[in-house]
Length: 191
Image (tube, rainbow, N blue to C red; front, side):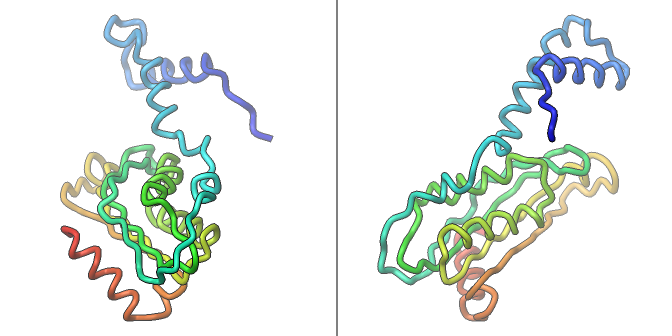
């Protein structure tokens, strides 16, 4: 069973980290830093308190069976290995079978999973699987292109590297024409 951590314990942990890096948490400029960090964590990691099923539960009946793509969704997440940000773009597509989602739901479901400690590959998989499980479309595709601070500000320090990952399910995996249409639509939207 997970032990709940109090807000005061979280504030103390930030003070400890400030001392660990060699600074003084009682210094004027750092007095409010623990509170700011805890509040920022509440936002950055808000995905732990959200349920993707709620977001994907509201659908609309539709007779369309043509691909729906939302591309260039701004993505902000945190690497689970170093707790450093990775940022970029997410592209989500699906082929409806009787029902569609409101367009903002695609971005919202991405946020649920992105606002947690992550690795990019798993983030792709979680988004695609959630849409596939809840909507039951003919196929789903998710592509993420991101820059990882764990590669730019530490480690190999490669400033311009972009990692691309994808998860393709159903017809997006099985039918080369569907897969190609998805990638063509993503490219035509400014990539």
